[in-house]
Image 1 (cartoon, rainbow, N blue to C red):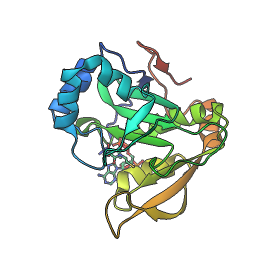
Image 2: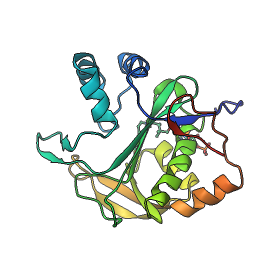
Image 3: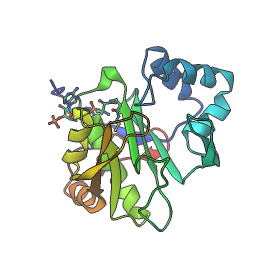
Length: 212
Ligand SMILES: CC(C)(COP(=O)(O)OP(=O)(O)OC[C@H]1O[C@@H](n2cnc3c(N)ncnc32)[C@H](O)[C@@H]1OP(=O)(O)O)[C@@H](O)C(=O)NCCC(=O)NCCS
């Protein structure tokens, strides 16, 4: 059941100081990769070189190493932690300037995950609503999101933000499986924000994105 009290959330840029909270979430079993359990390997990388890890999760590296070992250019990225006074998860926006097209190795413009112990509080729904205006600032009138058909939570997050199912696409690694493709208009979120809902974000204690 959804928490009855609407705890405000804010989106904060990753910081070295905040990495302890991120590490604790990994140690508690949260995986930042929604396709596989990457908790242990990410925790090892974080402890090995925190500064490099921070550059990686903040999208500041120029290249990206895919699971198959190939190295590709990293798209412009805005990476945030979802924060309610504690670390709640992550949400990232990536795009190619001047086009709504994405390279084949990028599944969608926005990716998000919420730690298991903070789920079903509306955080992902609100975090997506907060990111859509940032996409609009980049000239995008809509963003592409993909999800597994059986990921009901993610589908509801997308649909609550006005996502329109546009078809299916190939699954990145599971043969015979598909991903659902949704286009989410960025203007809907702007209108929702102008009306003052569906959320209010807490004052940012770090650099980041707050609601109205
Ligand atoms: C998908 C995910 C980010 C949703 O985060 P969340 O903060 O719990 O989402 P919300 O609280 O905003 O819930 C959105 C809706 O999904 C529903 N929902 C949440 N978990 C659900 C579940 N396990 N089964 C069915 N519905 C669920 C909520 O009730 C809510 O519906 P409502 O708006 O009708 O009340 C989270 O489950 C997660 O991190 N999953 C693993 C990573 C992942 O799948 N990321 C997305 C990849 S496309």
